Length: 462
Image (cartoon, rainbow, N blue to C red):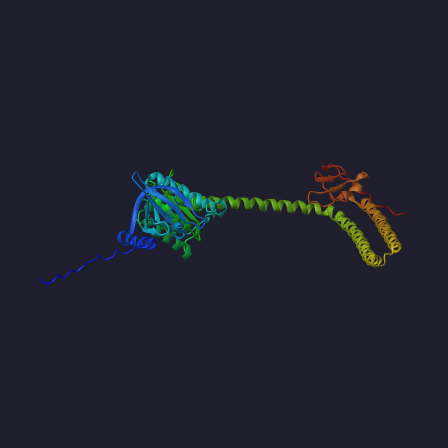
């Protein structure tokens, strides 16, 4: 029997992966098998890197999952990760090869439950307040009488009907344009922002009202979104926020130029009634009439005083011109002294430089003495000129005092005027029982003529 042929079979050697190759392969498998996923859990271990990336862990009762939100995605999150917050995270699974750990790369975070929504509300409120979006200084006043009003709200429901009814009742004939927007649910944020941007860019409206009826925190959440808040802040015209009931507050209320407790109240606030405007016009007309009456009375009083004050004013102007001339002499003397001092100082400085070069101390001392003598002489000259000017002024001042009508009154004389303000010089020109105004050196008198004694005619000699 021939020898049997023996074939030896050896199994193929298994492929040997490097650690990096295996991690990359597992990462690719996770991405293909799971794609985008949503994971619910509680945040813990939050860390913010210097580059702006968030690292945290999602956990529940049975396990935990590492997560990362890179800077580019973190800036668009509804709220920033914080320990203890219950969230629903959206992202993709990947493997971090250097440590061989799989993680969720987060691109969106949704708060879970009322407490989480309130947490997101407070976090966004704090962020926008730090940026100054709530500052009173940036709030714009509403137009006093807007003729074109833009509304951003739902086209159906009681809100739009109530607002239109109030506007028509308060001031008929206004131009109102509605931007129909979804105010709740998916797509509502984009719709409200588009409505605000429309009125901002078109320039049609003078004021915009963003309105919605009442509801729960979840129902009103559209107006707690950062995009809506920034659209209101960037609007080119004043914005009134009228969201929910009086006890409801949204981020939009804090950013808007005015917060109305209800949509109907916004319609009340945006325009005054016709009766209020007519009353304001009537009050302004009355104030104008009183002001005109006061000005006419003041002009009449000043006209009466011009007869006496004219002579005094002429003398005052004459004295004033001499005083002005005296001031000019004083300024000129001071300027001459300053120029002389500057010249002396300049020459002294040059002399000092030469002395420092030659070390001639005696010359320096002599120059200083001459400079001091020049200063004394200049000061004496200025004082003498001032004394001379004062002497010239004294006679003029004495003349002014002697010529003053008030000085004449001090000697026992009086100025008598009739009721029209004319000065009475002839007793024969005054009728009996006429009312006269007598001005004395101290005070005035009102007198009635009981007897008139004309001056006797002058007689000439034979």
